[in-house]
Length: 116
Image (cartoon, rainbow, N blue to C red):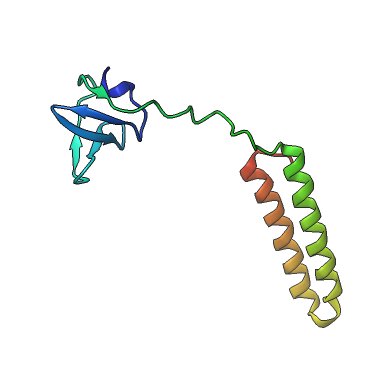
């Protein structure tokens, strides 16, 4: 097998020593941690099973509707609490809190690639 075919984190043997691939061109020695540049074309011997593909979802994955529902419940509770303290807070500060909360909510959904 060639070094370029390994996934990051895989253990392998190269020139009689064991390494762990840490980047596309670098591996760390399994015992000392010393980094070594490994040519992409280098022939290596794999010492463990390949890691599962990163795009595979774990069995307990939440769907987007569950995430949106849970977050909206949290958001509504927070919003209600904010309205409860409204009388003790200056109007300008309250507007700022509400705006920040709305922006944070939208950013949360944007980060997850969900419609807000």
